[in-house]
Length: 185
Image (tube, rainbow, N blue to C red):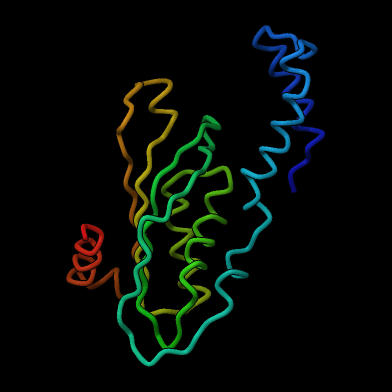
């Protein structure tokens, strides 16, 4: 649960720490705005992806389901700076599927936390495996990290790609390749 009062106090201290005056007209409401923003940005802290994946529909096929180009925004736990990009999620059903929007909601649950991209990729795959019990799952995240763009090495446009494969996707190279080819379409 986000504690907005603690965030407001922290922002006031941060403003003082960088040499600003928290009582300056333009900054008077900044602690409150940031506290509200953090409540939204970190809403995934208290969410369970299982809630979104619990309503399933019976199917009589086991063909790959792919939801690609799911835009996400997250915050790096190392520098508390944004990273953002696209998630691509595929699974092989084993008797049931979930509504496509639920895959996007699952991405959001994990994106709205302090994160590292590699962990987030695995969390999405693991949640789908746990909740849907499909034959396999594969998740690819590609993201730009502001900690590499704005500070440090300063390389805008560089992308980090992370992959998590579970079940049949772990073992079947042809299935992996089919998934990756579908991302190119």
